[in-house]
Image (spheres, rainbow, N blue to C red):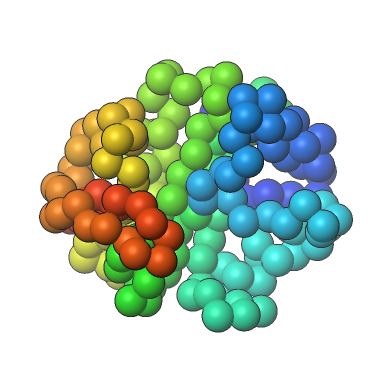
Length: 169
């Protein structure tokens, strides 16, 4: 297993990854912001540019990494290098996903621990991770990675509850 950036030769792997979510009836992949209207090459370039702090269009610099095993993407995480007021309420520093067919195998914990190391390299002292308070698996993953629940808030614009956890780095 390895955690890497998306590359041009990962076209089939990302298509398979996205299809796994679609097959499970999940239209959103937390932590992956590829646009279906972009070519694979455009997606790779956008992710690279965002990591460099370029072409942000209102976003903060962010880095996306993918967990690969045998040329297959098992999961991904996106690390926001800084927090805005919006990210303090929903999104935090890190969002992650594990493909539906590979859940409950420890991959989320592996990626979150890698994200913690990434945050340390950025010089952060702590990182914010948010999730749906009813997502017991995600809450446990965050807590097992050192997350301490700050609170559960209501996000009026999105009309959702958000659990906010801080992880000391």
